[in-house]
Amino acid sequence: MTSASAFLPLWNRAAEWERRLAMVREARSFLYLSTFYIEHDWYGVGMLTELVAAQRRGVAVNLLIDGFGQRLGGLVMSGEHKAALAAMLDELRRAGGVVTTYQPGRWLQRWLGGGQHVKIQVSETGEAIFASSNLTRSSFDGWNEYAVAVRGPVVRTLLESYRDIGGSVHESHLRQLDEVAATGVADLALEYWLCNPNTEQGRFGPLGWRGRNLVTDGLADRIRAARRSVRITSFYFKPVELLLTALVDAARRGVRVEVHHSHRDALPATDLAWIAAAAHYHRLLDAGVRIYENRRGEHSKIVLIDDEWVAFGSYNFEHAAHDRLAEAMLVSRDVRATQPAAAIFAELGQHPDNGLVTRQTLDDLPARLKARRWLLGWFKRWM
Image (cartoon, rainbow, N blue to C red; front, side, top):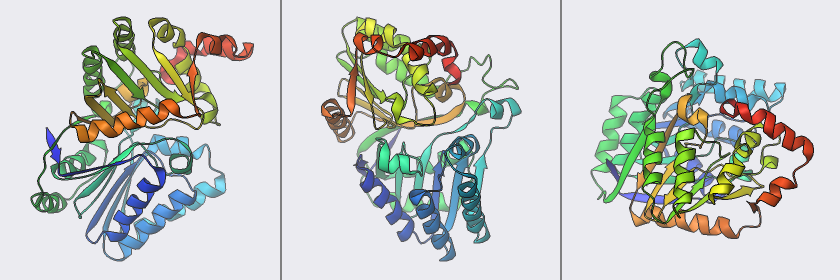
């Protein structure tokens, strides 16, 4: 268990971006930031520019990027933009910043897409931003994302976990956070769930791995205990069987289950992620699950159960989140955490970009798309 003395929801995209920039600009001692990938666009360039400036004025900047995530991000960047991004990262290193690219220890893990997907930003002011968003235009001008700015003991907990996802942390910086946290009253109870499956696997990586994932198991347990409602947001909803079964069973016993994820048009580069999600649409609909597709893109990761329990962070409902990527969620029963999530779901339910999927929706799909869904759905674990 941990706790927070301040808790600020950041659903508005501009609000999160300005909060991130303000933290970097106001930092005087240290700044840590982890991300899945950075794009060479207005946001990626803007953040790197601020990080270089902070390092040059004496701030110890530590940036952690996922190797697999950055390779994926490179698919939407030109060769010129990738070279320019590499030059900016080199500039940060030359200024004295620590830039780490996380790669799992085993070759097969790297080849199959192992990495870290946790997004944390912390400075010596005692504030942390814990988010679903990456440093890209998609996260701030396109998709829905959810972040929180927190203060109190939870900030140390988040920064300590930076080591578990491939980063390094100075002990003196943790002590500074303890001193700041001691000045506030931390009365908002939180749990922090983190799992990096790459550290638990043998030489075959996720192939045949039957280990426990704290986040997957915790979510499944809470869904099984739901009495009235389960509402979920995820990028593309294609969960492991444990979670899928828990949701289907909940819906069948009368729990109202809602899933909000992305429309196939939200990811222009490929529709494979949507196909993997749509592969089990009939099973969900038959159980009574309500599925919504957001045309702009739903990249937040929120689980709200009975309007009394909430989890949010980086965990997508997909196989990769279970057995290939380090993921983390903050969990709370405090009304200060559950109410903002309930307001988000109320907004999504009324938003014109959010369309309800029905059996007629599936019947109306083009024949070629239906065929691809049937054929490729068998391989959804890897999409």
